[in-house]
Image (cartoon, rainbow, N blue to C red; front, side, top):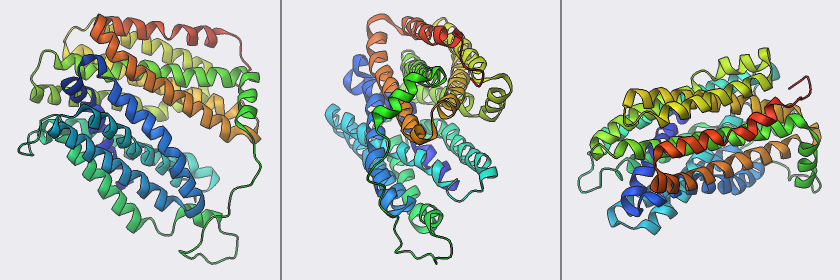
Length: 401
């Protein structure tokens, strides 16, 4: 859990100042490209990381993710010093690997957990992630002025890279024995550090089989729509809020205000997730998805009419985080329970891919919308993006949804 806190600091600092640094170096029109690049880079990093883990266990795969993420942080830092926009975008693409490590670490928490305790074990990792993610944005202000000769908006990435390096060292030294290798060990066979996992089966469910199962299930379709649309709205508004705040403040003041606002937003995303999970089981998945849509639309309305009022923007970002949590928790539950077991993992992968791609697209387009039409119009369009999800959620679905 300590590693999750440390690496959470790095991810959160990158999220907080990424759009601001990109705007300063490449212009408002491209201010969302950096975040999108980090999302896409993180998604692609999952392929080699999972391959390493499948063969050699969790530890080398997690170390790989954190080391690559640290390299990306250093590249972003160098781009700020050299004023190189191409290096900036390349650095953010690589920086996303750090978040891939954080996501993969959640699975490590349940490799050895008893079936009746897996949810609680996983929730502890989520809470640990939240601690680092909430604290991280508030550190960008003071850290921005620590390194002499380094631009204020670039300095936090030095510390983000350091957090990933510390995470890699701690995982390498302390994650022993490797939980994935230990879980895969045959009963009665002693564990050795040289053990490796058996190769995966040559045959397995294909992606098109998972797509067919999803298309055949109203619950699965609603689940993927919920996670994708909720993530799209959240990323679009969240990514451009720091830029909107920075229009009327100095870099130092912007980092301080953005740190507070983004911390409140992240608390909204994760702070009440256990409650939202309980509501998903108690009220039903579709009811929570509809509640999430209401929260997202309300957040867009408040943010779009906030002007530069910090209090109103903070309220909007908290509601935005809560709406995202509703659509993510209920949507992911729907996908998991609405497809046959033999294609479940593939379907979950497709859902995550869809969610990541919509988030990347939102980050890319949001900067262009703000440049052409302003922050209020972005919020209007983001609210309108929930209409297809609303229509799908209001359609009859199986009783389990």
